[in-house]
Structure formats: structure tokens, C-alpha cells
Length: 122
Image (cartoon, rainbow, N blue to C red; front, top):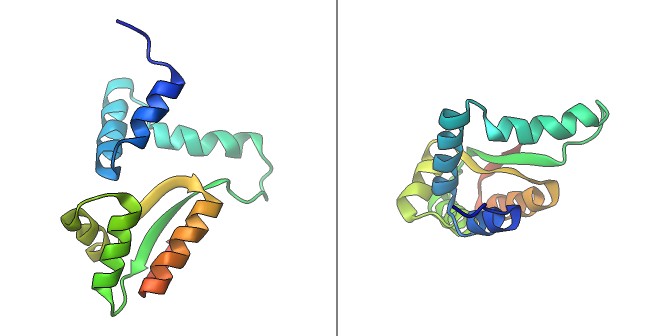
């Protein structure tokens, strides 16, 4: 079996939707006993200073607001998920995107707030 390069792996990830990536992370947890998202977040913190701003963040919805349909459409557009999955995220005040650069998080936050949602960036 040919070895998969980092570039091939990243290219494959770009073609996946958020639900498929979550399933991949869960499978990696089960297979290797390690949470890859925890390792990715912990690595920069271990080497950086304690007061440095995080380089990767998670964007989640705190409240969908009155214009919930508009927020669902924006979540669907951002994540590439289907309508039902996007609605589930909005209804459950779920995570829109995880482990993304702060610049991308700011763009997503602006889009969601424009649609009427209250957003948390952690």
C-alpha cells in the first residue's frame, strides 16, 4: 500500500464536509487513543507564551436570534453541510467551525452576526 503524504491527506480533508471530518476525528480517537484536535490545539500553547492570543479558535452559535432561517442559510454556506445538519447546529447552539485561524473566525463571526446570530469565538 502506498504511503499517504501530508499534502494528499490535506487535499482529501478539503473535499470533506464538517460531518465527515468529525467522523474521521472520532475514528482516529478510537484507533489511536488520542484526540487529534486536542493535540493540534495544545501544541502551540505548549511552545508559546501564556499571554499570547490563540492562533486557532472555535466558532459557535450562542443564540440564533429572531432571523433563524437566515442564520441556518449562513451556517449551511460556511460549513458545506446539508440543510438539516445546518439547522441542527443552529437549533442546538452548536459549533460552526473548529480549529480555524483567528482571521477566518472573524469573517465567519461577521457573517453570522449580520444574519442575526450571537456568536462565541473561543
